[in-house]
Image 1 (cartoon, rainbow, N blue to C red):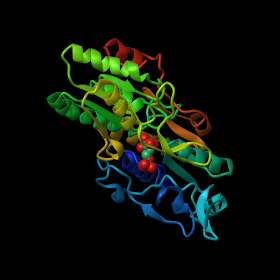
Image 2: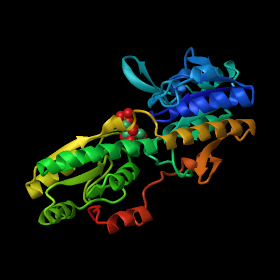
Image 3: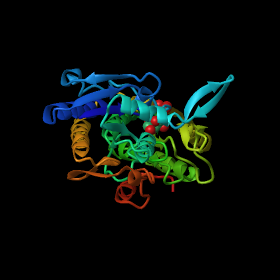
Image 4: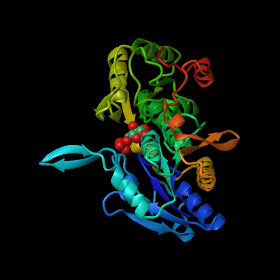
Length: 359
Ligand code: F6P
């Protein structure tokens, strides 16, 4: 067998761990050949950009962030941006990609990606390409799996940032607003907010009331706590307002969020008169070495993906259903995003220890 492997969409800590596990298990357990495809689906277009990966190519990459294969979140073969007569247009080049997969003599393609890349994988599968999906995203918003790799590292990075911001906020008696990634889901903000003892956590799933946020901060001042930490997910929105999206794709899906933290910071400053600073964690959450739990999950995901190829379970995605690593049809996983339940145990635990969600 010859199998291809690619990483698509935004990077996440643990990608190299999955690549390593795919290469080692396919080669050492099954005696197959693994072809690395560079820069997501883009590597399957034009002249193709690939390289055979042997176990020694993966030596030392487990603790490394990023992806040795490169990635892009703009490489959709069904809608490739091309310049025609000086104008930008979208072209469906999926047949080229499929032809190239045949030319490369690939018996299967392992797609490591989030909802966007897996949606592309599903469309290729419907056109006859034998694909296997591996769920990746720091946002943890993919359905049908308890957790995506990369998420736990992002939470650890964000928690570490909160620990640092507490000390400077306390010294200056300030309110520090910290914006975190997550798109339409508040998982990173919620979990890092709890782990980093935030006073307020604002997430897209619970639209906030600014006067309640400010009341919480004012109550803390009365108790002699003159500093507060407010965690804001990038997709958080006020009760009567919109998400801070600055760029959308033609279907209306948000590509670029920016400004949620600044809006909350400005609201608090105006209403309370307190000294407020805003920190945007941004891509720090995507970088760096994966934590131990993500390295283990990435390894198990990679091994399972190869096992699914062996069992010809194409069109399936690896899934973690503790304590088992199992699989689900990709189409089921991409149907809807996995969001925080506003009435769920984690939110209720946070509220019962005094954390405000601005509701
Ligand atoms: O989906 C992962 C993610 O990091 C989101 O949390 C964030 O909104 C987005 O990607 C940022 O993407 P880009 O790297 O294109 O700015």
